[in-house]
Length: 290
Image (cartoon, rainbow, N blue to C red; front, side):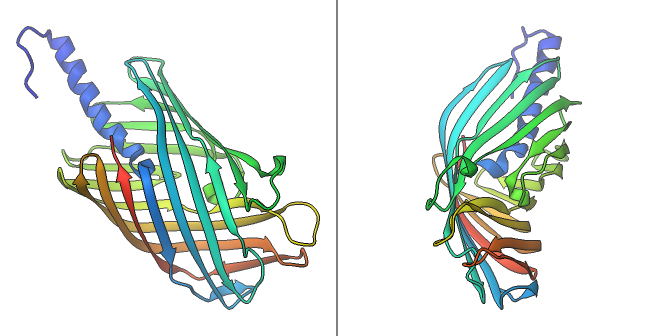
């Protein structure tokens, strides 16, 4: 990018650093792009517990609502809906469709020359829509500090509550991001690790490791109260984004699921558990990148 000769050296280096930072920071939100996705796995026999076969089917939609970005702070809001179905043969538990209807709110503020405090607050409704009450309310939260060490990398650390782990337990959040080459970026940490390479302006490939479970509250016909469905799942996938037109990209991903566990209640209210075997999944969708 050419620089005017009249620009002072200090402004030049600041500009280069800011542009490089934007490139690296984009990796941290790459997996949260707006759009639609559908994923499904191959049903497999549980390694232990209830049932003879277990599989999942999931559709997600994320739409942008508002975005304001400045030099010192930024705010972004979205609206999201994820619908999950379980194919649990040999059990009548977790037999409904489960919804996560949420509004992610992301805010960052520069607190030092190269440091930011960042908050991602996502209040939502986790339900089967048969019995909606205050028990169905939940919020994901990420509160962390991000420190830009150079134009090529940053570290971040804080606390989070993320229902993708299959519970609502507070956890530490940490990560390091590095722009290894002009087209290759690495984010290593919790809750997500991602290696991404842009081969050209129309094609990007990536390796992604992330939790992909959930928690929902449901009603059981004939029984009073609310019951939990808790699903733990880790996905490791290889994917690619193909530019289609404008800001629209086509996404495809293949991978494997590991460390899986589901806990729910059957029609009598008794708790049942299964540990589904490792299996393969596929995902396809449309992303909107700005």
